[in-house]
Length: 96
Image 1 (cartoon, rainbow, N blue to C red):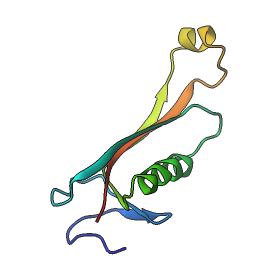
Image 2 (image 1 turned 90 degrees about the vertical axis):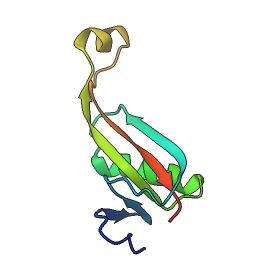
Image 3 (image 1 turned 45 degrees about the horizontal axis):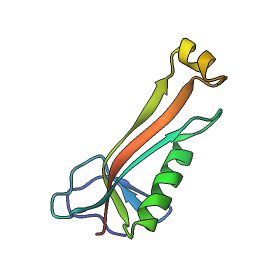
Image 4 (image 1 turned 120 degrees about the vertical axis):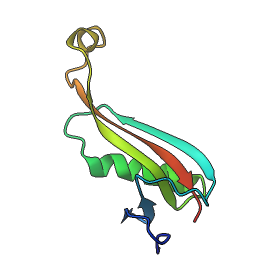
């Protein structure tokens, strides 16, 4: 897939990811993914987001934001979770 002129990003499993706004394409669905499991990677996050985008009939995700967050130790103890770091990602699925 060829991205619009001047838009930087990358293709991952058939879905174009960009941190930029692509104003000429309207949002099909807003996607939010959280992975709370040990040894998860950015590729795992992108794979889940790509699958959700495809299921919505989209082939790109604009306004892509991602990162790792840390759950407080107290919250982790209350929830009986050993892994306190987790990946989160969000963006707007669009059909280009």
